[in-house]
Length: 439
Image (cartoon, rainbow, N blue to C red; front, side, top):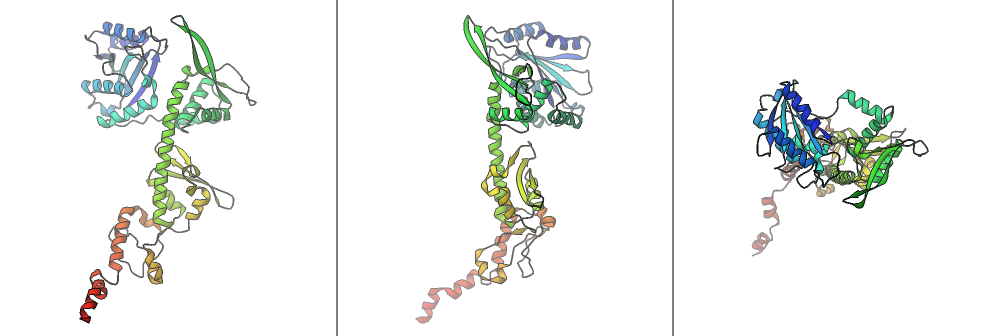
């Protein structure tokens, strides 16, 4: 399920496009919601009145959303389900339950899809803040796919488009608007920048800049001041090269107000990812004395974390970072904790992977100190014998191990290995038995 969002300053073109499909028998009016009468002209008047509320001076007053599904879901997508999907989608992106809208069901393509037309302003003239939040829209579509058991459709661009985006990022042989759009999206949704200064620094590195401008206006005869953002090219010496593009004209609408909301979300994402990565690393190195680089990569990857590292010309580890495989966020080891800098991780990495010693009391016995309690691949506890080696190569057995099972089997192994049982110990060292013999 993919949602395509467009905005308009007038309602007529949005309805005209869909009504022409209806007249060509390529679509039907599926629903007219929150209007007291199923009348398209009446719905147009009410939605138009919402969008042209005199309390608002916005230009993006009306919203047009198409929800697209795979042909394999055709049997599930009855008219009743499509109505529910339209309603729950709008509520999910921030609209009120009683907000008026019109739904069209189109049959002009092989894949089923519906079109929703409504106003971005509510009855009080206030704009629905999340109506153009594309990330919120994606979260809502993922949730609806799970709820109605629909086939999940990735909204990630095709490989061909991804290559084109990379060319825009690193070559820049495109228009100013297209280049800025891609760079803004890369900074906010891939790098997850957390502040305006970080965004400016990133844009400057590609000879782009953003400036704050002040616009004077009047509202009800009273002077007001608006602050806006303008994105433009910079020459290598960082002087303005040409007239810029307003934030409202770009795809993600990166105004200062919208950016501040995104920065807050990105800061939370960074914090959560650091906590998760630190928790996984702490768990790994609390179980092992040392671990090979390949085994460390395998364990982290099983927890949706990719290990990135750099080595110098002699093979020494000089840089470490961790990437979340789900969202693509990369964070350095140093930002997680001082324990996980490249220098510190080098000390934890060895030629072979070794579990930590089971108990400190075994250190007094050389024979037992060399024992390490290992989990066999068949999952059954292995008795501790002198043949057990203190080193284990996880290439064969790591996939069948879990830390919880390992701890349980450690405990069982210790109990089985004790030379003197609890009962025997009491008999041998019970002070009352010694007193009884004296009497």
